[in-house]
Amino acid sequence: MTIAVYPGTFDPITYGHIDVIKKSLKIFKKLIVATTDNTNKEYLFSIDERIEIINNSLFKDLRFDKKKIKVVAFNNLTIDLCKKYNAAAIIRGLRAVSDFEYEFQLAGMNKKLNSNIETMFLMSDVENQIISSKFVKEIASLGGNIDRFVTKYTVKMLKNKQ
Image (cartoon, rainbow, N blue to C red):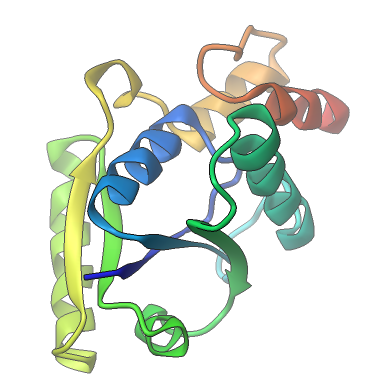
């Protein structure tokens, strides 16, 4: 397998997401990090801001290889995005057992929609498993220190939103 898609809201991207990206790059030659603009959710950051945050976090703060990661926005089915980029797999991050039921159902539906695309579940390292974008936003809004949870660029963008 050479290409995978890692879809998510990334509102904002955290070190938990970044752990999953690092692990994905050990398996795949190229990773499409795809942030969705699903109208069923409310976002702190616009789609353009999320793309900016992801790009700056990955390529400036952490110096990931731009040849191995492409950051895109999407608002269609993940399997259609996989077809567009000729991806053989969808990457999904798991934090806790409670995530598994939803992710299992989602993987099953994606398999029914396109049996050629596999879903792989990856866990972030133990120290990052409790991190969620929701908690990061809440801590930031209350003036807490979020440096251990997100990159410098993300901290800056969250402070600008307050």
